[in-house]
Length: 386
Image (cartoon, rainbow, N blue to C red; front, side):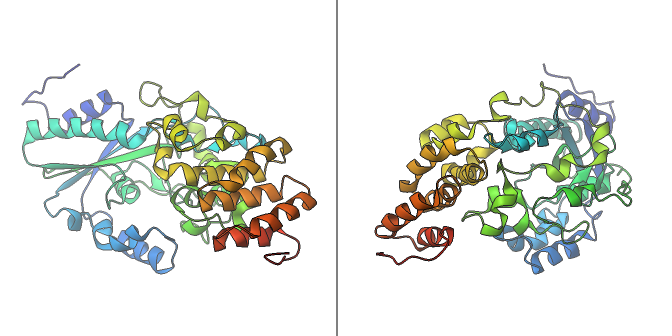
């Protein structure tokens, strides 16, 4: 249903009305110069190598830390938030080792697609009412949404580096509208973490070297999503059955007790992605993967990375009935999948069977990384043609 635009309605009132109509739960305004500490903090993050293989962060340092460097014409930044709070503790699935744990946000339709279209509608109303120009961003451009949201008063960056809201806990999607319109800014939110360190203690891989600092290279979300290579050996057991992302630090936040469950009208959660059986996911070829995850953010990492993650979960499952599905992946076309299958199999079959398969595999395996997986999984190294 279209809404009419009154020339007599204040611009801020129009924006708030349209944001509510579009399903956003919170809106606030800040200025492009409101995050003066962000550039130095981001530079330190990159200097310490905490960004891992996410080279685009280093490449866009200047524009990412300075909104006006991204778009010199910007005068006001509207930050909008959409609650995606779950209706249950997402950590419950971690005890079901034959099931996969998918981050709450990825159980919904891709939030980029959900939010961007709605932000464009609001931006269009702003231009129609006030003229000027606008730009819309949803985590796809060098924009530091979380510091901007803190400066606008929507919440504060907690010790887990994510935004925390007194009304919505740690479950908020963020988007921004940059505009040439002059809007009165809101006041920044204060930090309400106090002495609490629940999020830091909840991290399975100790990814926080200090409060408010994240080493992405140790973060399960990074390891299962951004990381394109094998999962490092040191983190495989800690990953458990987390096959896409990790919600542990978010779910541990005490402020979640004030959070409301997200409305199904805004974000449609898929029941089949709450606790999917590992056995079914191990059988996915590329076509089946694309069909299953159509419209999902999971689709972006591709079948090989996803099956790699599922194999790590299978290796941690203690479910020996998964061994046949894992064996079938030893000959997969992807070296990434073959390597993960080797590790998983080493934990699901007797040592004698594994050693026999290793000897046979070493005669035909051409990828050094996969050969290393076979050797590392054996109690003692074997010769290539033993």
